[in-house]
Picture 1 (cartoon, rainbow, N blue to C red):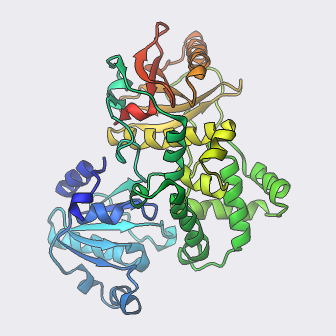
Picture 2 (cartoon, rainbow, N blue to C red):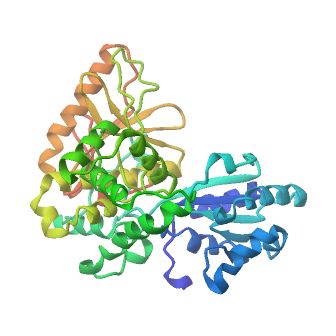
Length: 423
């Protein structure tokens, strides 16, 4: 229903891109809201993943793409990757019509590179949608703009108390639109079903290559145990052997990780190394993430009580929650999310690189009692970079779970509650 639609940060970008490009492709994980959002902008549609009539729409598209493209514009083609030649058909039709905003495509997986014939640069613009941020789901007041914060502009504000239990519920429920009004005791069912259908159906459908479901599940559980950590494929292999007593060779792990990325189940945080200029060598390792921390939670079979009883795991999942939101917010104004780690074992949880080349440093902490040590870590790394004639961060900030105020400390480090943040 239209009156139940939750505005997404991507809405304004979609509207703008439809005025600039002939077609827009919205990619992202299943159930994150791509179709619902696309319907706001489309005037006709065809669902290629609809099972009606033994997947009649899909068969029709395979027989004649021309018929599928007919209809009022913008025309929504949902799950276009089910019939991959449609990409070139849309590109060609955009050229023929020479008009903007003709098609909206959605896709829940990335087809094999060999199946792409043309990049369609300048014709089909790609946008990434993720599960909802706390601001989009109504669980952040949004009184603090990340964009303004990254430019050092913040008004000291009391933001209200946040309970530890509320933070556990944000993680368990995740950013799935259809899960926002579900009773918290039932909120784990949707992400569990997401994992089940991904293993049983999507892993095969992406390229029709059989894979061992048990080994995939073991890899997913290992990724959940190592959420928000920089861990190598070899370490994942050892973790699976030690915990699940399952042997998976490195080539299989690499292949499976690639498929999980292509299905938008995982989304890693790349290492930041540009524009620092410091003589300290930085590592090029990725930080492991699921697209939503609820997936880690369901794989580890954790409820609110168990999260509260294991603050170490809770801390890593809260970090994943914060970094999911930082990615969504920063990309809305042209920023990019990274992490920083050098060979002196100095780390910064999150780095946002701005369009002008400046960068901002963020530590993410669950408890307010960790703010001082987090601020000291940021200052220490900044001083080290400056000492070696590197480019220091434009701002430093601690994103906190249980802080009740947004402010700037005397040492220059900002403190902002995650539940007060927006783009």
